Image (cartoon, rainbow, N blue to C red):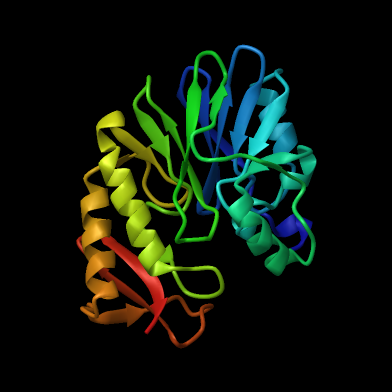
Length: 237
């Protein structure tokens, strides 16, 4: 994409000091705290910083849920960003350089005052994928790991058994949240989707593949959609 080809960033106010920022099929999230704002992911590219600065006058700290290009396009506008260290080598493989990252680990908290996010390590979609759990307001941000659209699980860094373990992990803490806010597809999602993702991933890892469906034309011919019950994966069998 050239700069002119990036879809526009379109902010949508979810609640007080909480925005989803949509961009052509992917979304970021912005939270304004007492003294700073937290931006979760950075889209395809384009002037995201100017969009955020129209929503908040607080200094903005970026956090990256994982290092795929549609989540990092505007990352350079915000200085060093939070990223799980297990994602550093994945970023290097894709970009040929080290990330401008601040290590953040499972269990660490980002306390904005009105929001307090706990980091949950959920590898599988990528080696260092993370979720952000807000226990008080009972929601979780899951990046690409949870969605009602097919999850990319082919290519370097994808690991379906690790993904299955991460979905089981989210199921184990599901009493801590009521809503799931994903980076793609419908928002928010009910936590019942975790059962469907767990079932599908579990069946595939034991060799019970559902019937394949065609993937989008821009994907390799060997990639198919394997899905059921409204969830699915892009996979190479």
